[in-house]
Amino acid sequence: MRRPVLALIAVAAAACSSPSRDGTIVGEPGGSEPAAAPPRAASTAPVIDVPCDGAPRSLGPGLSHERWTVDAVPAIAIEPCLDLVRADLRQLTLRVVTASRDGDARPAPRWLEDLALVAAVNAGMFHDGGTSVGLLVDDDHENQARDNRKLGGYLAFGPRDPAAAPVVVAGRDCPGFDLAALRAAYRSVTQSYRLLGCDGGALPWADPKHYSAAAIGLDRDGKIVMIHVRAPFLMRDLSRALARPELRLAGALFVEGGPEATLAVTTGAGRLLLVGSYETGFLENDDNTAPWPLPNLIALVVRSGA
Image 1: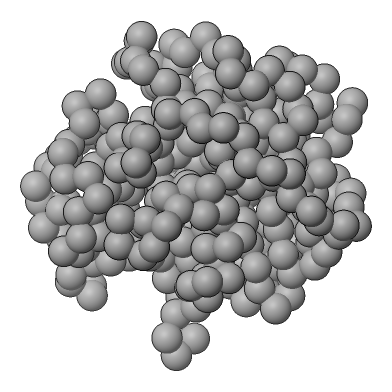
Image 2: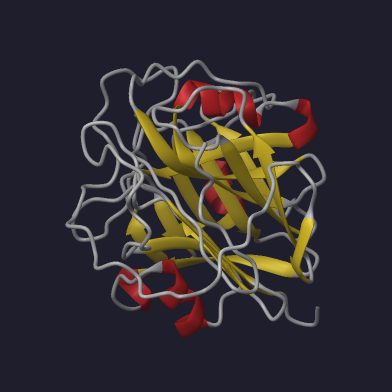
């Protein structure tokens, strides 16, 4: 099968997908409103063939990259690999980047370059104009102040109490969940569909579409995990793949599907760019290789003093 384009130090890579819905949501609108495809990236970086063996590879201080095989059949003949970038929050810290405050929408590699970011993934699905489909607040800045009752997952970071957990992944139906308390305790809160349940188990997504996808989660060691899969799967199959014990994920949120799904890393030790392509009913091929402009990202920066 064809292997996704992927590269470290010299870059490249591929994949994206379209929004979907978790098992409690049926018949929801899709994700971000599709835009015209951008021009192809003019990159001549050599392709590095990285096996899907689960082995961690350093991307620089506090960052590692793994590729895992997904035991499911994608919609097209492409190697079924899952990419994880784990970040140690003792060395790195999270921030929200949004065009509503930080400048015009642009491809993720441009965001990294312009704002001196280390890594970034989609912050979530968005409407035309860049407003998030789900809640997206960052301290006093509100890109989307409304709690979307159709979306059951939350990622919160930037605790107001230094003794609190640096990052929380929560679900509306999880024991003790209180959104008002979560917003009071954390400066940054984002909202989307969940890929893993309250206990880290798989969720039975009802969405019948296949697509590339980006996600973000937390592992059982407290590391943030940025997730990307170029091969187009049903989201229930991706959920089962993420629930595998060897991945050690405690929770995960879907953040984008189709050609807009993006994960980018730039450090002194290497670069990684993963973009999506296939989406049922929109872009049913593996041809997209360019990162699309994005208005909202969850990003990593070097922690002060690290």
